[in-house]
Image (cartoon, rainbow, N blue to C red):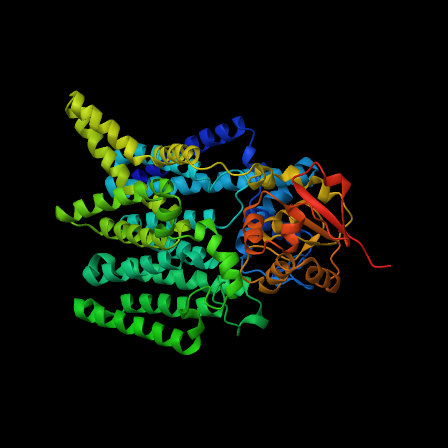
Length: 597
């Protein structure tokens, strides 16, 4: 069988494995009744709201969220690239079923399922390229288990992080295969550009991939020259297409640090075209120092352009955020906490997020210590280390480090499976079982959950009113959704659900661009009832909605025990508000504003 036919056969085989694992995960979710659809998640619901707005006629380039924030809304920083396939699924399902609500539910299930299959497929391909055929089966099991129980591809997961993870794994897998498959490097650059276009969270991974491609070209011109050239072309070309397709001509001069704009386009174009050009000229083929000098000059050029034209983008992403929002919102976002904060606050959860990546890093260090370092090792190790560093900074990065850890862990399992086949002793079998258990992330998640439960039982029991999990269920918003449309004053953690389950508009939501709306809600709930009334009248608020079990409500009450929110939770309702009878039995308590006269 020729190399091309053999490659095509392995692609088909790996895809079938990914598809079978996806069907198993789908069956499990169906057996659970797709229960995740009923759980409220702000980002997933906001994505659904954005898709609805697009389908209802809002402009492709118009990213305003008109129903959140002050009058006129604010501009979201998310990309239409994720809205488009979800909208397409809804349109197709609507045409087949004749029901838009049913079509939305189909999209909420189908879109994450497709991404699950794609991410797992590229994980399998990466494991095969890294450690050969023997690593394929472990990568299916370890990868599928990790993706399933992390929840990033659960039904209803419309947020863009799952897209970014899939594209990052695709870019890595294609680079690992690039020496064998000629077009792989071009498509790797394409995937790297797309994941950057979807969101700036993946800048560290894209930069790492680009640096690896460049350094591999420095080390081995004959083997990596075409790869570097094609990767650069793919990266620059797709970045240009994305810029033209998602940024209106009127905004070409605007620099947005948190979304794909002229900043990212200029940097990507210079870096991509520069890398491709350097890899194409004969001068760099003469010596390693010529290549290194040329790439160093390119890096300096990119740095100087960024410093001269976009210096604001070199600062911390939240450097200009209002101090009150940092204190009362950003510092309490669970996925934005650092590893060190997690060790102090919830040490049992550290294992669930950091154990398998740490084991994988140890395995890579051992491989390096034994010598015989390969290009595959360089790519996987670099991305894994960067992902672990990001995860140490913010917990959300652990999703990427857990996914990347699957590759060396699968190779580790494959090694011990081979030993077990050649040695049937009980000791080897026990070690193989231990290797499997250590490598499967849900095992660590289960251990962390059990430890957390044990610690909670030993801790003082909170008041019954402190926790109400129904705040995070869609059914809790049904009564509010039946009320006439108006402006609702509500904490930010129930802002997106109100938009998704009703026609109301809200002021607050957990989005860093919505500064004015979030501050208004804080001022109202933390202020006295009289101070809150002035805000309510000035902004024509019709309803006030709260959920006493939400974390934000508990936090704001501690901050202002004599504020409006505290009074409402204690049953002290000011005379300018009246409880809405329909919501007395609902976790979402609603109060109607009495109009003067």
